[in-house]
Image (tube, rainbow, N blue to C red; front, top):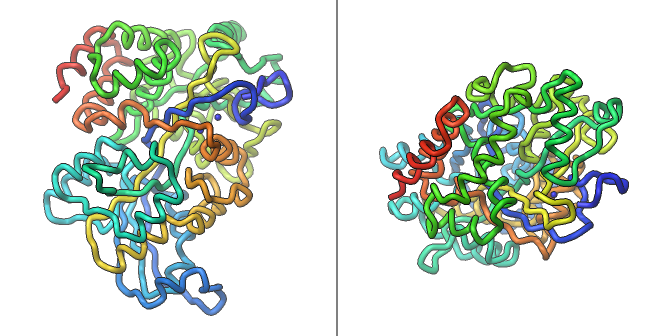
Length: 452
């Protein structure tokens, strides 16, 4: 979710102006900790007019997701008025093992009523296996009004819609400290070579320029795929990227190997990583949640992570162009070239067709819900009818500016759009092998051999 020249007033990250930007999005909206359940509240001080359509619906609806901790609390608050004005109790459970546990639950007959699925590949799997049910008519109508074909295409199979987009994020963002850059005379880079030169300068000044963390519970490895996908978009472009995702070219195509080598010039460079955490191999055991925090005290200078990462900073940390942390878009190979941008998001997918499940899903697909959730902070929707004015934090404001632009083309990252047996299994694992010393050739061959 990010481009004017940072030397021209706003960093090439959270500002869209010079040149066109193609947003190629990437799921994996993983956050930290465990989630909680909802519960209907007192409607005496709530304006219930927006919820009249569902006022007579009753029941309990379970939602399962990878969203936890503060993000889960914000989500619970976002539907609290809906619960207070209806007879519906929403029970949310967030899990760090969501991707592995959802199929197990489905196979064991313990399906949630709704799941927020961040990978199109996993979404297709639960549809192909016969567990997901098509969305209700009211949900489908909301979806057609709120999102374009690029978004809805990921949840449409044989002409049936099986899910609606939920949150969205930008994952080509490089987080940095404006104060640290200013104090040391560093400038936001406009090309990959400039970024490499900046990294060399920072290393010579005695700081590891990059923090990197690939650990994420059962999802360990996904941050590494973001590096590869961003690199491939810059070295080979959108067409090759799409061919790679759909396996029209093999995973071990020479163009993919070139992207691995470009990313490896940073991620596997002992002079560049891993700020305050250790050597290159420490990346495998450094959690993505913790990895970017050394930006605040000069432990590292840059961190590639999604716009949702703003939720990891404690209260009191200012996310702004002149604040404690901010972001710039991972630059193209050459200054002035089109800037490919990746992002991600989740899809609300139903596994039951009871009236109360349809009611909750219908509400989640409205711009009014998007406004409610966005007003809680650190979140944005690609719903075209969402009101950007409700967004307060700069990272989400910037993401929304791009996501809601009619010129934006949104694609999920490769690991999330590939079959789940490859993208969220062997590819993720391969990134751990790669960062701990396995050759690029061997990693690529292993992943290619896993294609169904």
